[in-house]
Length: 115
Length: 108
Image (cartoon, rainbow over all chains, first blue to last red; front, side, top):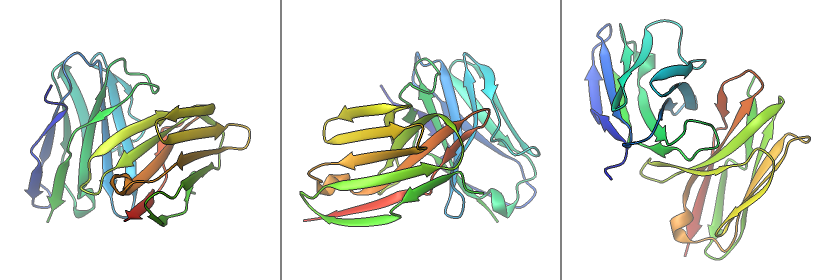
């Protein structure tokens, strides 16, 4: 079991460019969660999917951010027109059943730096 | 304003001592969770504890919904317990909100 896989591990983009972050959940897990962590804001919930359907995107910024889960094996978080304030570690987690009581297994994160 | 207040922000213990970490919530909560972040950054779920007391090894979590608080007790701390402990609440109709974390350092 490779655990949750996130790629790339590090990404540097210029202001205004697009960034796409990938997450591969643990095989058999039905839910994928996305979080963002910065020194200033701490850890923030962004969105989550269960059985590929978006369940709660209440933490997603209204503009420029979008997340998808086109199949069971991966989810993407896309940031359009990246800004320096988007610099953060983006964490993906998966869980077996997709309810809050389930144990979430976290990936190593993608460290995004927007110059 | 900040919905989740964690205390203390940091704590230094000698190996073998106990730790008590607190979370207080400013709004009604449906459930809460505790997470542990290792010094190198990886995150681990510790407890989902909407109410009452749960124990796992040396860790005990107690949530009192009416009082809008939750605690994490670490007994007989070990050096490997060092890291940051985060609580998160799921409020009524609101997203999961995290505290700022409590950094624990356990020294020999």
